[in-house]
Image 1 (cartoon, one colour):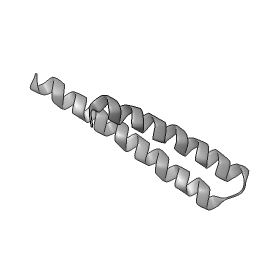
Image 2 (spheres, one colour; image 1 turned 45 degrees about the horizontal axis):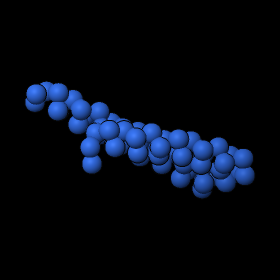
Image 3 (cartoon, helix red, strand yellow; image 1 turned 90 degrees about the vertical axis):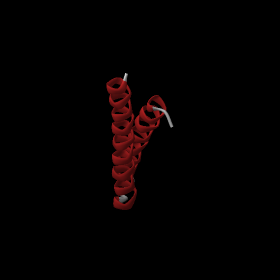
Image 4 (cartoon, helix red, strand yellow; image 1 turned 90 degrees about the horizontal axis):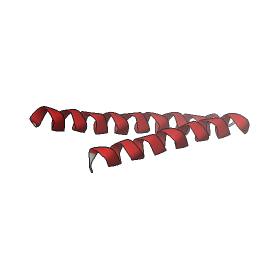
Length: 61
């Protein structure tokens, strides 16, 4: 997967995670809220991978 795709998917997962957390709080579901935290963290990690790929590409050019 390319760096741009990683960043896009990361941003999408972050947004979905935040939404899931909000929904969990709204319906008083700690389990749903926790899943949202995990999904948001996954998104942040994906974005970091994309940024790292960009940095590596720039360093090798």
